[in-house]
Image: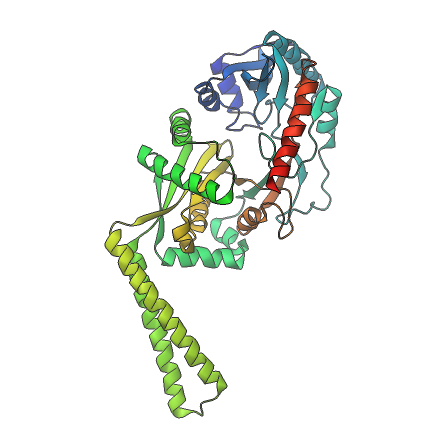
Length: 424
């Protein structure tokens, strides 16, 4: 076997056919990271001129004048082939020393434990302990089976297997999810698909407002998403949710008329029957309903006058990754939250995944906590409403190259604890 630097073309050809293919391990992601100053290394192991394993590594400054290498979502390899993995690791460490690296980081795209939609371990399934044991034996430090968002990539994702048709899948959505999707379409929520720079600006503004509202750092500006569009091309797509104000106005007027008709039925009954508590309560409720729709008609008329061509209310960016179609980031405008645009955007994402022949939809990051009130439970609950399964990955590993890595680990641990203390 031979460890060597691969050409861009060699790596691209190999990565596009590998079972662990991920958009993180692509030349597009390499170009994106290089545009922000990272040095790119395409490294691999060949045997008889045949690539057995390969990885795209970024090199960035770390501390103490040293660098760090990082293979996002790990190298593309058979992690059960200990011989190849050991050979790769041995020579990777030597290569990293030449780069003056303190350590090499990777978070393999390998499932650790199959789980159902509720986060429960699937009966009869077994955790992928052998991969973890092998990497640790080879000198990698495992950061454990974390449940939150502290690390480079999410260790917990929510994924839907598209092995049934859409109509059947929809019957598995939660009742509230189906209802919200249908109601929002009726109210005029629609989606436009875009690669336009103006829409990227609109989307980024919504992402940022959502981040500010939820008190987390976005770390991404419009320039980032424009570059992402540039380097990933048609593999990246922006969904902009908007309210068609014509449809919304028509909807509110129809609902108001239905409410009035329902009230008239109650009034007719009261003329014929004895007026008891039940009819009185129904009449009071109908009055409230009519008042609510009268107010909504007024709102719809104002929106129609202000936004005759519709108003943008939410945004989502998605990326194609091997057999998966992934949702990366989404955001909504608080003033229009009653239109619940995420339900429509995510549903449209699923429909596109079917149309384009993907095997999976990946709603990406969730936390590993599955009880109400726990960390980021709302994000998980929303995604679970579309049915699917929880994907738990093996986690993050660091390969020590220099002894200064021990100091780095102490400082990193202190930083994590400081973030926790600041929250409280």
